[in-house]
Length: 495
Image 1: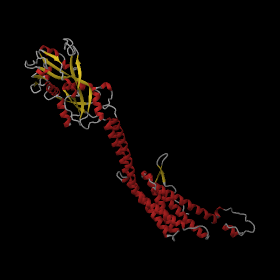
Image 2 (image 1 turned 180 degrees about the vertical axis):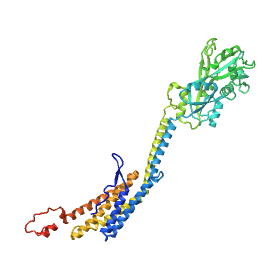
Image 3 (image 1 turned 60 degrees about the vertical axis):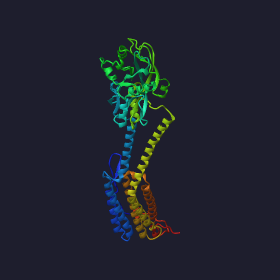
Image 4 (image 1 turned 180 degrees about the horizontal axis):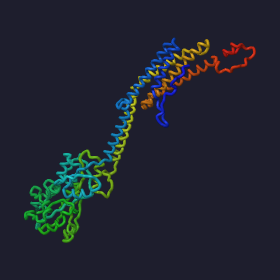
């Protein structure tokens, strides 16, 4: 039996970890090859098996060197998994948590109020516009993310929107001695083709004087310049404004001084066709409690305000924007709970789980590709195990001379050593590339080596029973009577 000169093939790398080193294994295989050439020269087949194992062992060292490169097949599964999980996390963060800088299109006076309410909560950029129609155009061009749109402006169906609690009032001031809105021929209103102007056109068409009315777009000039004098030929003032705006302070009194009074802009049943209108009442003194304006309650309409988003804006960004105008409500829900919204949530969860499952399948597939790269190595080791199994099966230790049994024991010992080297090389591969633990090839080789080694050890033990062990026998051994010495030496009992 060939005694190993390199009994330890592992090096401790820490207090509780051990790492296999391949150089002592290569040296051990070379010793086995030399021992076969020296002690078993009549067995070229076994020598070829040992030399093949020596080459495989050196290949394992080269494979280990390639595994240390920063780029390689063995790193692809781990790199893919890290990148996929990172992309999934970024996607989830971007979809549900991230809020980028929002550009909101609002009239100038509303922009000041919005910045005040947004202070300390979210960073926004406001883009002032002349009115709601201009804001819609900027949304369509993608120049802004959000816009406050007054009801009455046509909003494209593709743009998501939410109805805000705040609303504006339709204010119609009629100059005396006119008694009906249909008598107006010249009307003071806000910017051309914007919210107030568009709604005034709708109302005058119902009143029957839509084609006869001329519009003067000087409302902003009238509110900003207290010396502005309304022209004498102006019959009425039609605007849609927030009654809480400080810009309305003193306006009712100035208009009353010019002979204007607040009247009802009643359009009858036509208001039912405009879903953004709600019937409302301006109580006495509501616009100016000092001068008691109006002097009596006036029936009017409130106009809904919408927060409209551009296409592609996330729900989280929309919710944050809605929180800016309703900060006391906490994190709002944009859509009312319904079967449709529940289905959307379920589909989103299903999509997220589907992405995770696909990532796992792709990771396993890449592990399979990694195994394919090592399949040839494991097949070589498995083939060598088969050759060793074939060679050891030809050596029978039952019967024969003592010299033949001793020769067979040496042969079997070499086979056992070769199997041990194969098991070490297999473990070395899995040590260098841990992903190989997820396939069954290394386990199969280890099990085959263990089974064959056990079979060989049993053969050697059976042969040692018949072989003389002179070194371990006592110097003076009492011999039974009538038993020949040759019988004792051979270990056989005569009948």
